[in-house]
Length: 394
Image (cartoon, rainbow, N blue to C red; front, side):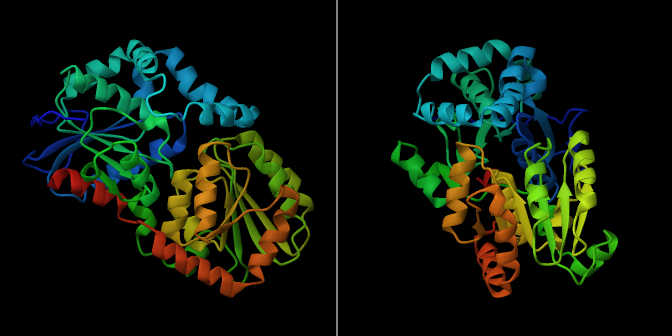
């Protein structure tokens, strides 16, 4: 598990210049739009780079834009279809494929044949440091290092709480993982301890900035006297969220329920229509995709959503207790088990009991306060900064 020495290169026109003298490390961040978490982790690192001395330029690349249509369908479209329509099948595949190095040669050969433009892009960029927030990207960089096609310091940022076998690569400088258990796992399968850092998953610096809760409630037209229950359908607006929103209409306690419908315009319309018949003690609001998630988390009392790695990390930094709903079999079920073990989230046995769980938490403010305190202990708001400082300083 070696890596080549770094080479210092000049910035390109497409990069963001961060220092007037253009000295320091040239950074390329590689994510993939097969799921919003990988991209959001990359964006967090990109934003944090502006605050880390020693980085001259940064470019964030969606690797699926440098692959074939077949690869895009396999890693993005097929994934979305499976987790929404046949989640059990996805969970089966996730478990069956979670054996270190199983099928690695075939997979990497297939990826390489479909991603020649990315190889050429990286050779042209010649980054000093490459950070991958998706396993597809780390496979390509690792292969290029093995065959002396690029010289870069290669870092892998795992965006879930478990390191699935797909995340494993041979050529790297450092792995950044979310938990001590993930670090232990990597050491047990032969990865050197001095190349593993437990930093948490990087979240955008906006989540850790001081925010005036009362001012934000006024900005967003939120009643300061009522608790806010935030329900997220994810970036793509999972249609299953509509069932949960209808269930919440059976809550007994007064509350404001804000439904974030992502990029799904049909879901937004359906939620607005379904909630017109809501009882008087419940105020519903449906919103499309927002770039102000950090503000909505800051003013909310409970978050209902799927336990993706980035969502969990953002909630931890926001000290926002969660109710976990319909985790995707595989990575999200593992994420859910881990976070439930820490006592900062609850999970209904069925969507029918969701309003019971919300009412239960709202009736126990001391329990909610204890969950927030524990989240503050677990949160890693500086994960992105720590990752970059570790790489630049080493």
